[in-house]
Length: 512
Image 1: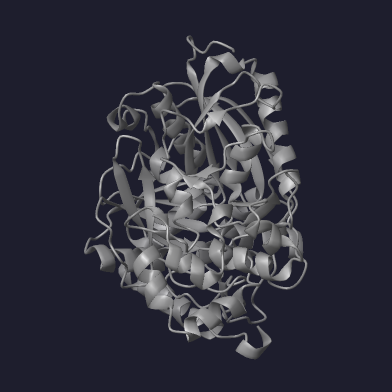
Image 2: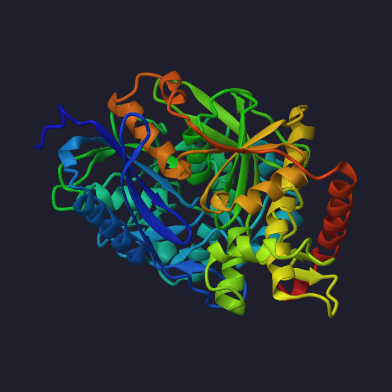
């Protein structure tokens, strides 16, 4: 076995909705190695979104190898490996062969609308909310598991025989890293398990009553382990992409990982991550707070020393993905980086609003029948106005979530920490400050999702001895102060809310 006595780095695999990144960090949180690769988005029908799990695993292996090759870092220099992942995305695979039994059903996919509606019609939503902190929605893994078991021939039989395994992407990656069919660790952590609609928030274990309602055999589910685990889930296999028997000892869903990477360890601290969607989390500490304003209650993290934290979350499915839509579907931009200059070229959005409800509306509305709209169009409108309206939609959706969070927690948010790819867009971050009427604070390391997973692994591996030590690594890059006056802020927000109301309930139930 390779010695890690002189290990000075921690590392993370960040498997996201559009691609996979492997990163290595030193003790100060400085990036020492990074490599990224996109994967395909598969759209079999309107509203359906899938990924190829084997393509994701191959991309994971490739980015690990190429990051190490390019940096010259050796596996024995890495103390621990953390995993962070797109949450809710659902895979069921054959335990013996390691082959997926169906494509991964992505968190954005709306194919489980009918399953969710039946559960709601049966009056079960209060039960699910009380036990899991979640509304019944197409977003979560439980209905996706049920869809695969009910619709893919032979899968339910394999599941009942103990020959099939379920996992979100974290579980799939860890299982393959640590051996796959030859003894791979079948594990997850509470932050990911809390996104399935199957985990009881109080016990942090799978709930037998909910499993029975959805018809899901317990034996297909992974063991729930701490998010930072000194014992480790397993070692990377010697013939794998990392070799060197690195301890896999950190696991956090992507948004909880970003909260961890932003060092939001105290109750009342919040962050917003701008990626494919946007996700605003508020640390509520050990207090399990059930939302009265359309937010989710979720597990922020659980350490192996018993320390745990819950969070309120506002989940927005389409923010950065709306910019991708401008690029890939409409062809009116060539890259996301162009949007800043284009949006600056006009004084405002020309009276239009773009509500990108491609997958329905999530927090705080939870309308799976909503669909996207662009409203207020006149002959005056140009490409630049649409680009600006797209960026404004990101900021307005975030304001809706902040208001719900303030109402639930009884606080007034003075400052919002931001991260993710779109946080690099200075125009968007200024818009966010203007629309919120609050400071927007950006750290120097924007890849806080990967950093959070690496922190969880480094904490377990002994690179740091406390959460306080991690706080010392947070370094400011820039503060955006609000510049709009209150009348402009409120007028713009009133228009946004009118547009959202028109997007709601567009799809008729019988046609869903």
